[in-house]
Image 1 (cartoon, rainbow, N blue to C red):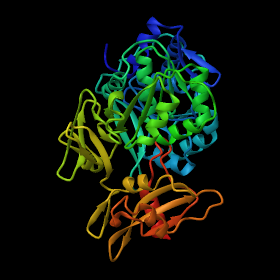
Image 2 (cartoon, helix red, strand yellow; image 1 turned 90 degrees about the horizontal axis):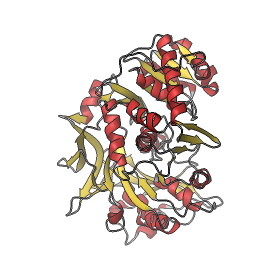
Image 3 (cartoon, helix red, strand yellow; image 1 turned 90 degrees about the vertical axis):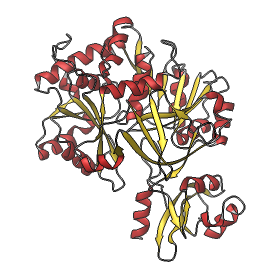
Length: 484
């Protein structure tokens, strides 16, 4: 069996056609139903002239219609290119103009805007609800994709906000999910709640991992604590992965139940020991993992349950099949079968991050004596002040929990005397005044070296973060402060 996207569905549909594959609220679909809808959509796409290698853009809210649409596009060898359903018309226009897809598929919520944009750009458009009407449910007669063919283009924002399309092959997609399955190799059993949207690589990675083991996936329409916990309890889910910000919402949720969760997974570049301890207390039976990865690499580093408390703040060792090293400045570099090809139609940008098969992550890391990695900052986000380097994440962690602050981020602001100065961007708690720089420096006294202390405080209503992972968009804050 070729290592293609279809191989996540076909074995389960053959062996377990009546087993639930996915749920969303009160709706559900089985593996057999998912396969039948995939065939109908694939035949419909072939009827519209979509062929091998064609890019198909998909602009839709999360629904149980999204998985078969994706499988159908992949089944006929076309390339799946999802758009963030929250995009404004201008954002969607920019991405569609960049991707220049063979076809745009829209749901009812994006039908009017999508149709207008498609006509403006000369792109054929079809409504998702009408696509499979009358199409055959027989397996499509078409040459299947090869493992190294392009499967998906995921859009990410560069430091300037210009969209970049990360190109991921069928084989890389399969290997990413195989690496994820290593945390729980058993087939069948309880399902996994997926908090990520399906325009994001991580959402598909967790879904494919579950489906390859014939397990159901329980999607949620929004990543708030009550919605996630409702899905865990309602479906008696066995596994849950959340970024730290969403874990905080889950822990703050007042919904009971879920005490027998089997896997509590957390990820991104840093998971605080306090958060880990609270997850342990709330879900005492769950084993924990901490993971690190990106759209360009998939899951790359992982910390197992036995090491979560023993190595606080670490993100682990390379997953099976992944190579890791650092350059002279401490930047993490990764190589392996899960890497993306690069950025669509951006050879120069690709060349800056891919060197002889190694991907430059942009993350600065440290290793302990046993080789475990800890992320200490971003190469581009590191602040150079008075000849010293400051990692924003380190200062942010030291400032968390200060009364009167609902959210915060640390950025470097250009300064004639210091090169850059450390600036704290804060969202005051309701009814509270923003702290002064002196207030923050007093709090940090004895915790961090003085050169790491903020010299400026800026109060804002909202810290801009990426929608899928919750990471601070520091370049946006720097531009805002520069304009100020």
